[in-house]
Length: 239
Figure 1 (spheres, rainbow, N blue to C red):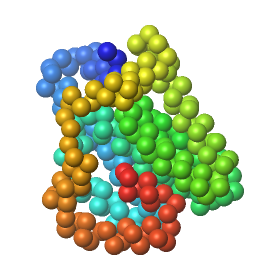
Figure 2: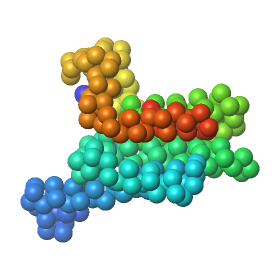
Figure 3: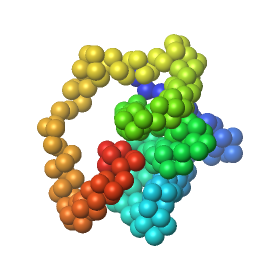
């Protein structure tokens, strides 16, 4: 019990309370409002992709990247859903964007790395597996000798971790209760298998069947970009 953060459910609970105070009580009305707000929030994901591409490759590339994100079938299909995956994904491009700003502008970048860690931390608060993106940025900073940037990135991430811990303390009764239960349930006990097991190549096969044309067109460009500048590209591919 308690393997999930109350952050996202808490936001929805506050919204429902506000709707009730405004005289809205229909479940269908709740769903319509949530769907509309979630769709609107997905715009920030597209904006993050645009700003990241603009920072790395210029405005023209950013326009194409933004359009590709905005017209992505999974985003259009899932953006209205009240899933933690959707809400978490909004913050991930921004984490890479701030990391890219820090890596490109060496002077006075402490705040950028802190913001990158904070964005990755908020994404993790909403969906714990998103911590992998913090790890991707951290590994880049480690292997490129940006030790001070790694420290500031970690501080930003820890700010979110402490916030989550306090939220768990207030809701579940123990500091970082949901994160520890989630880790114990899925990793220590290995009970995630109860929810289904697929071969390691499952997503690769599904992605190829659905988007083989996109892969053929985009893969060469992705590898060229990674060869020319791998500031955050490994993290983007992982994303």
